[in-house]
Image (cartoon, rainbow, N blue to C red):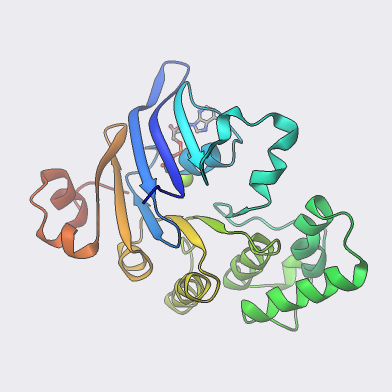
Length: 247
Ligand SMILES: Nc1ncnc2c1ncn2[C@@H]1O[C@H](COP(=O)(O)OP(=O)(O)O)[C@@H](O)[C@H]1O
Ligand SMILES: [Mg+2]
């Protein structure tokens, strides 16, 4: 089956600092893939490349059969509408209510929607993430875990087919970590979304993903299911899983 998303032979450097020499990764429709890897290895950059927030020096990135790097800037919105991103830190706009935060991508991408339609969608998404009564609150009134869930409501406001999660559980206590993991699983099950999760929390990685991809030495060193990882004798995989490389 042709992958829904494909990073093909990606090269990327920032000045002299080489991030990827030859990165290839295929993601099937409906799959949740977790990217694991040490700090500064280029996990967040992968997500930004898919959204074309930055461009690689070489290689192709396919999304639903199209190389997104060839899409003209003024048409990138067609990709970004279909891909929701939960940014690292999950930053909300502090000066806006929860309602306006969640409505933001709708205001941006669906200017023709009526106020009623926007309100209906915002309330529906707040329901999905389990915080239905927070619309009038300000981010400052929310706990860290609640902020993450509101940021997730914002990421799914446009009903994206793909959700990118950048360290969704970092800094959260176990209860909120479990909530976020359950939401990732729920969204996959109910809405058949395709997800790319960046994490260094191995418990979360094993819990939410169909396959895990290890970013190491400027490329995807290994990709496989938990069972495949468990029986892998790849030295880097073993060291990483046993916690000798990492953050
Ligand atoms: N816009 C940028 N300009 C210059 N260097 C960058 C930029 N974005 C990321 N980097 C560098 O690229 C490397 C990978 O970054 P990142 O993908 O954020 O790492 P991580 O795996 O921790 O998410 C880091 O060394 C980072 O400093
Ligand atoms: Mg990062």
